[in-house]
Length: 286
Image 1: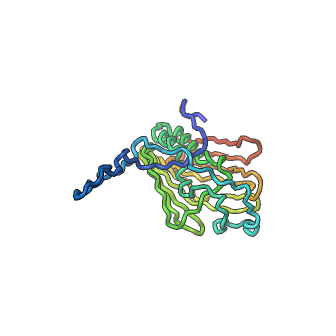
Image 2: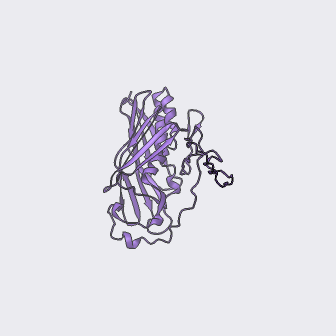
Image 3: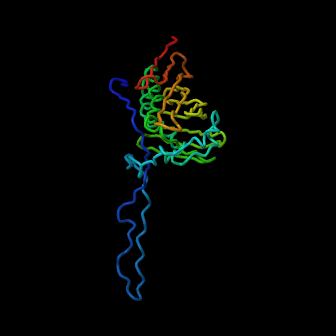
């Protein structure tokens, strides 16, 4: 989609990015002078402090190893007694997990945080709502390519922190409940404040349904706007056998709690023909 006459939002694969601390080359080398009898050896030079990542830190673009194939895993023996139940108490084979947990996956929803930066600078309230709506849709950008795996469940009290100086935000998430699993997250920058709530899942024999319970909230400090919206239902098909694929369906209602003049409604339709249909419109009550 194209916004503001030039911004194009693309939905592609989101990658895991880790920020290594860099040490100047040669700073940890020991002295190579030979020891002489009766003369104490020269102590090695002190290691300088580690450098914090700057405005352009080096980040890896792919994981060091490909994911384990999960096509040969038989789940019927594990899940036949779990139809219609919450899968948070069912131990699934590790081949079905990706090398991330739910707390890290929540941070991936800020991959397109530049949309919120633009919303903060927009003067027209309708344009701000359009940017926020595009950001709400971008949270599903990577799901098409990752339907065959699920993140690990965090332990109670586990936290994850991500600092992005290149994007200008800090993110922290925590597992606040184990049964049922509930994760909370919060992110803030000069342009926005972001937080969201919990979700639950159910298994229906051939598909896994994920139903978000809480709402997503975004505040824009410059304008004082506070946007909130719900998330749609996510369904992973062919969990037991066959190629797994994912779809999202339901309605997303984005409203500004500070100003009720406009709200945006996005409709995710069930899959009939590819590509996945999505429609939306902005309503005015003025």
